Length: 534
Image (tube, rainbow, N blue to C red):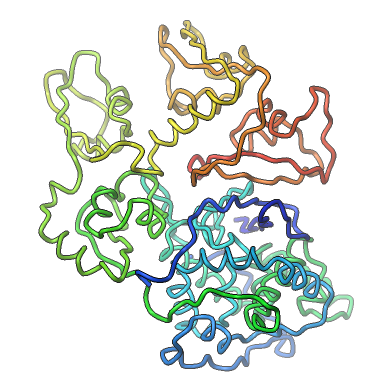
């Protein structure tokens, strides 16, 4: 199984970190944390390095219970060589040092999660630098998404996520779950350290894959060369990846000398894990916690919809200051009142899929709620349909809100809305080709999947392209501005297919001429709905 992970270069206010081909541009849509009120076994090559090539004798971490400030706790437990004079490290350090506003934004955003992640790192006797890795991976944005389909604070791609047991469903994506993804990432990194015996090599392998690092080590051994990270011929993005983490760590260590002001983060829990015994509406959970639905989503970014996953995980992260209040009020709330239920009388002609569309849910949800083994239903009987308690706008991750947001964007982008009546023999592909759009666009505009069946006579919405303006940066969490560097063999159609966007959109966003030929290394801007990715 291929475990090569795609590294992303994060940019802030249009500034790009150098040395990486696969680029994620973060639009900083995640609200920053204000620390006051509440205040992942891959197939491993088990060949070990020679004893002389390891660096296993690391100092034990400092007792972290007696340190009040998380940044001071971090400094006390840094274990890697941050003073290496290699030009790659120096270059990254100078970039971060010259952009203190970026570091301030990212470290502020980390405030919700840093206590938990740092303490998990130290519990495992790992270097504190590991807790800073999400700065490099995702700018500490749990909703970050790269064109390599990596998601979450630790940027797992689907294959690696599945291998480490991170669940993915209509309701939930474990790559964005702070608890689950952190456990998976630290487990993966520990395994890589056990394999290579050196944290710099383990970090490189986390980025480009253990096989790639092992191959580079073998090549150097055969040539009689050193096999440390700085001596290996690794992919370009990996050669910059480890220096970035070391540079960030040095800047945190030397914040005072570098004139970097970091918001103080108290060494106490920001949230508590509260176990649930049933599904619950997230807006209702927010009310029980006396916080906004948006804040609940920020603490529980793994949940994609308006409620927790009925199949688990059965827990929520709740601000520490209101966790007891939430537990008390949850205990007093009967299970059947934690989500709304609609009673639907089955009419002649109804199908599970048409009923699911009517209630903005899925066939599997209806089957699960009614203990149905298949899609057979009978007219005159009733189905119970779980539904949201509040309006769609209250749930920033719900499918209906995302669809509405897309429609509003289309309406303001000089597209013209038209209808097309499906004819016998039509397919998504033939309709899309006829209208010079992509299948992904057509299905998204109509809240369908490419595998759904089309029936003659159905009306489909199509947004025709006119003279269009470049899409504005969205204030919503789920639409991410992604920077993509063109590679050899790329075409507009292959890039469009990779990101579920259209060729016409890529041309419009980048003001490309009709006959424009792509060049390797050319930078493109894409706007990607990350909840469409798996």
